[in-house]
Length: 108
Image (cartoon, rainbow, N blue to C red):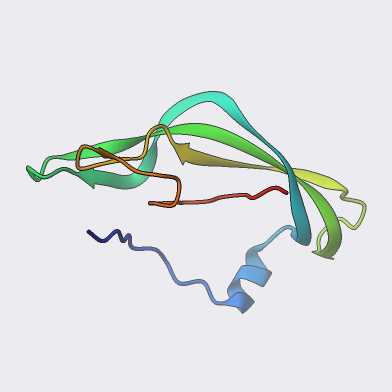
């Protein structure tokens, strides 16, 4: 089974031009929020070709800034809001976090 999704191609020069903040940072904490939603423009298709939205939970990851490459140089931390799957369930099977990962942060 393979997973794929379409997305726009943004070369580095476009990313740099459009970004408000570019940093070298390390994650320091991750916390689920009360937000319950679905991933925009992403669906799961089961073995009967039934498509359904993918449930998601809001997550806030706090980063410690090591260096600012673009933006406010007094920035010491920032919070990145993103989504994680409510449940990683593909074709009736429970998958590990090594499955369809959209974003991950690792801690020592």
